[in-house]
Image (cartoon, rainbow, N blue to C red; front, side, top):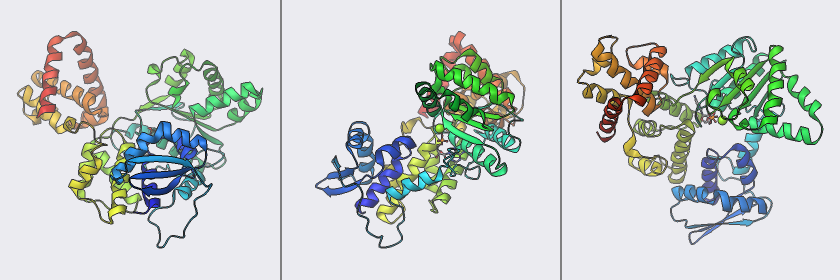
Length: 451
Ligand code: ADP
Ligand code: MG
């Protein structure tokens, strides 16, 4: 593997672990200058980059490099020549160079809307974990501003909030070219407010936002405690809302759980449609993997796909990271890793290998614990001896696997998601009062995780 290929493989993984803005700022125009006696010398464009990479990202970069080339023992950064002398590739390169990749990424972002064209609905896999948010998004695209306004999507990191929000913006841009659309992070909105105050350009700032047809603000939880920004957003919101303009937010938690959020803003958020994205279930993770593999124009044996989908459960960004690792190994060795090699490659990404459970295991263990047949537990029966264990099983699917309520309903004979919500809330509440129940559930968990 050439130095360039090695660095390219590192960058490919890094971009999933740090924000796009940081990636562009600190890693642009970096490359490997030399590799000698286990020491890798990395050229960076300036002292700022050097400091940042040394202090903030060195550990991460080192970790990634070691995952690819275990002979490297030390990283050093040096402020180097402004640009890497580029040799023409001998054969069509399997991957673009770091530089051109950054440029490509930047090109994909539209300057007026801030939307990145790679986030489309076509590339968005839908499963029980995100189907509500997805359906609402499609409805919004059909008639922006008319249904579900404001639209508030929440869910943990790496589960597809940004992708979905951007896909809405891009789709509306296609179907309604006359509409003015703007996507932005809440940090960027905050920066806008702060500099407008400092430069006495508040009028400009306001009219910029208030003339929009579609306003999309990502990661609204970062507005917590920023009073001036919240106030500005509140007024912008009201103006847009009254004019029937579509407003879309995302957050890592529901409005009522955002601390230090002004009550009037919270109630605005809650006045519209709120949809959550939960953790993808096994089948969805597999579907996402297959989609991403196809997007790369690659193939991966089924046993490895199953392994990755079964073991990387936390979020979709990690799934992508795992794939990149496998592809980097493919480029290095010119052959796909075997299942055993894949396990070794992904070892550090997969935490708590013994803590992996499936919904089947949970259902099996609950049934066993209450001396029921799995079939009975999952059927529609309302017999008293079955109802309660079923509620407990539902609760555990939610707590341990973060399954969505619609999925939990489906797993138990096609029950409605409201039944699942009711069960989880009921058991959750009871747990706080009943030691007996607490014991029971702990015992069941023990079986789940030890068996
Ligand atoms: P969040 O904003 O919730 O942290 P992102 O939208 O940035 O998550 O998603 C992380 C990565 O996973 C992105 O590369 C995104 O394209 C991908 N991704 C998320 N959800 C899906 C999905 N349903 N189908 C395909 N890819 C997805
Ligand atoms: Mg995001």
